[in-house]
Length: 270
Image (cartoon, rainbow, N blue to C red):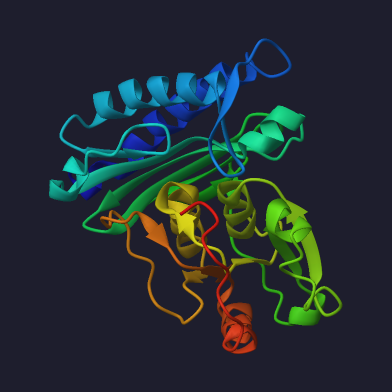
């Protein structure tokens, strides 16, 4: 794989992700067997069908790449690869099951720990946020950029629906305009597109949840780091990050300062 190939590769990845979206939507509201992988962690036939399609299509585009997906057993052979696909075939399965239009398909390509391409597609709303090195970031086909909002009190802050229901934002609810939204990848993509100003979580997240979105935020002029400002590195053995704060540079700095003494939440899926 050569970085000069990424702009053309992006078009092929977008088509693969759209195809996965069509596959997923065939299951919504119909016969869609589901079961629990863990605590509050459902999986469905739609997840598996999307995973199969994406694995075939994306590895077909780059056979030498490694593979990391929520719905594929991780044999850690990816750790030996220079380039790795990081995929969530259906992020926001609970929202998908509830027919809340806040779920997405996310695909990213990582080179030596750094994402170089990201695509997030919401098949319910048909929103596509996509970008790659040398190609910029687009939202619904037009140029995308993080918002210019500088004041936290005026910012729209996207947060997890589950974390919101658990009361994890009660202490800040009076001082922030919170927007509970499903799908981590979708929330990050909305930050990249300037549709919301901030996303943050103090709960551990798997790499496939955030990889595409982190790339998009960064490529659209924003910052996406851990709560302590540390860079998020991908294709790690544990495959998780402890926290994430994503916003334009001004809001990002403000949030890091505001959250510096706030403890991290436990990993409920450990």
